[in-house]
Length: 187
Image (tube, rainbow, N blue to C red; front, top):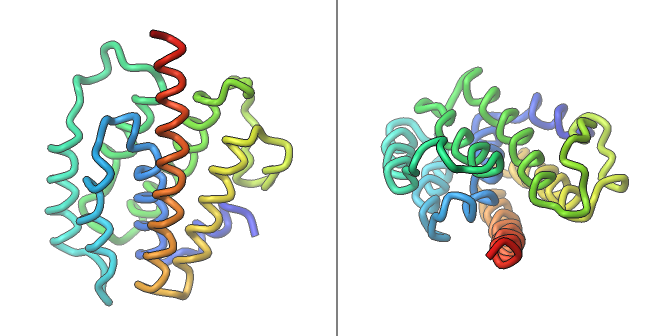
């Protein structure tokens, strides 16, 4: 099943977890600590996910990751910021599906922009084609992580959150290494 189909079938917890996982993996671009999103993840563990706790924690995360704005930030940082800014205060409904879908696209774009082996201008939508094998290793790994997160959350409820968080943590470490290598190359 394609990534687009998995997002279309996901429940509220799956959508929130999917969007949050994409944001979590891009956290190194926002200079956020590894644990800044943990309380937001925790809101998804309840039988009825989120509610007021999601909105409260989302606001706290936005305050913690507030950046200088659009001036001087490269496209990858702007995409990560937009993921955070676009997160809906209500953890349900069509807005959540739109956010999860936009996060998926943005995260793949971030990985494409940061991968020196990739032509960032290529526009193939690997979310539909599932063409991980034709992608650079960084982009292919991000696509696999997104698919795995959605699979972990589908039908597994709160138990799938632990696996989704582990996958995101691994992806965050990879992206942190890429960002660090890129900074050393510029400096």
